[in-house]
Length: 485
Image (cartoon, rainbow, N blue to C red):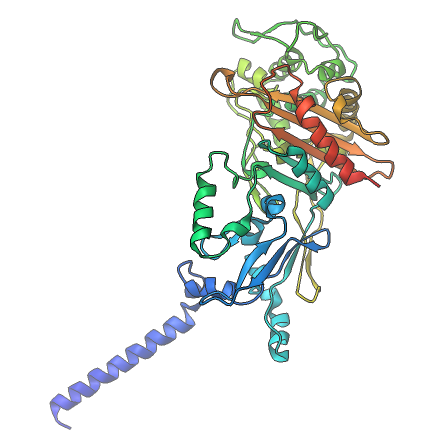
């Protein structure tokens, strides 16, 4: 072989070897990363090449996969009563990705989860079409509907929990949206997506988990807990040494109550909770100090990330407030902020004798043939307060519903405890107040439910009991729907 031909042969051999190395590198080393790359459109096409599993509420599916036999997509996601369940399911769109359970449980719903390998292999051998697994939620359909209808056209959110297990029984945010309007890839889907994201009312914001509000007077439950846990008071009928008005420490600013006629001067803890006395609980918080108040708030879940598995934004109790700021923090104003989920957790722990359970939304995952793949086990997050303190808080909350600002939540045949709140916000407190109601109900069979309701811009009336007028009836409807025989 002459020299030029030998050189060409060697060069060709090097090219072949390089091609072999590159091919094996791509197939053996980079395969997984390329397959999972967000820019790999094959993943998107494969997701809709066969029916996705369904999200289940009370034994009924609230999602489905519609056959469309399109050029790239064979199926499209659809929802049963989408606006009602959107805060739970999220969306799954051919053009805009997915969110919430549709995203977090995507591998299982799409059938690509390794735990479904055996099931998928059997289906392939028997000629059955591949199908994703189902995600069974903890949602109570009646409670969800009651919350949604109760909020109606108001902006707000409702969260209901089972205090004994942490199961989320209702998760509602309004205004809501229909995920089906942008599930496809057409012009109408693109317009629906653009319109929803441009809407000033933020219908795609999950207010139950992803929005924080000043909790107002509902936070007085945390302040009362701190007072008992730190042995400042022994019983609910202990009198407080509280002037009316109360001058915030280190200032000349007077903290007033909503009405001069309220019996807040030197009131007992129970009376102060009945009438939602700012002076009493502001002074208690300032006397305890920021560190003890923060410690108690954190035992209830403030300043902590909570995954349901949908991640909730952290509720916030400040670390560096001045004494006058701590007084305002302690009545749910100033820098204190909470999600509706967080305030439902406060009520849940009180109802559960101080034990705070991990909130969860997925009860089980199961394959298409209904075989259970995973089952949730209840988990305690911590002991927020002692059982003795919890009993005192229950007594105070029941009194609020029987004698105080929460009378609109009374339910015959059930023990109901609650706390109203009207949270000021905006520059100079010029915004319309947020109306809160935090509550629990127990039946004769020992079943219970804890509910938090917030209504945004709910009333021009700043009378301090708008939580009782606007939010308490919604909570009542949810509690009745959950515990009704």
